[in-house]
Image 1 (cartoon, rainbow, N blue to C red):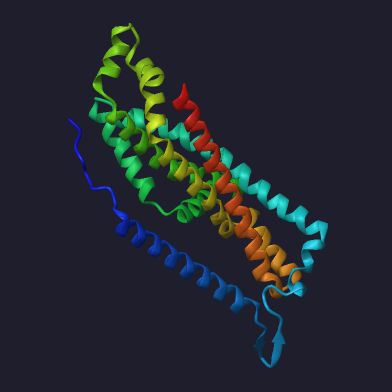
Image 2: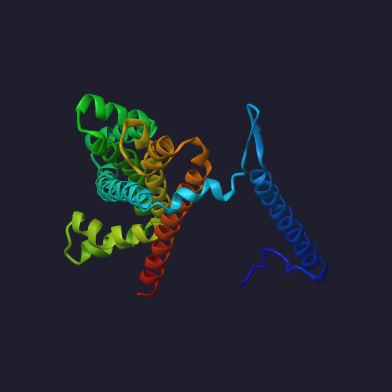
Length: 271
């Protein structure tokens, strides 16, 4: 028997919803217009009139090919740190989800302590600790800190996905003659990955953004390349254009990762 959870909106409710959407859209457009107008206005600083943020004199540096090579190097450093950290984080998450769901307490309890410790540790402090205590260099300090922190979160997500599966999945694998570990890896993990894919992807996007913390430990990722090195070289008048280009690059990378993950999820569903 079907149950109606809510009534279908009538003509008055649809008109009200349309009116609210139109008013909200106008308010957002007006806010964005006000921000652009304010930034484009000239401003006085110590008796000197400076051009607006969208003046051509603030954007002429982007005709320099060397600048884009420097930006490209920052993007490459960001991507290679994020990719290696993501692979290690997923592998660590799988291992932790297995150990966390173990039947023996002497395995499960230390794993829980490990997860809670690194999940509660700020990523920047972890980078600094690895850099200073391990003398690993900036790259591996960034990669290892991101892998440890995000691996614990992915491990908890996978453990939740495994716990949400029907018990019949595990029993079916065991009845086929598979060992418990084989059942986990071949039957349960693929289903848990499919269920937790949105959470894992969201965490990997956070991981990619957290590579910007490498700025503090001296790793030449995108943020350090643009807002530190290039801003120091060209001057502070170009800070806003460099900031805006950095934001656009980060958005493009993160939206691409999310789009690829959605496509992978739809492909798995069709199968």
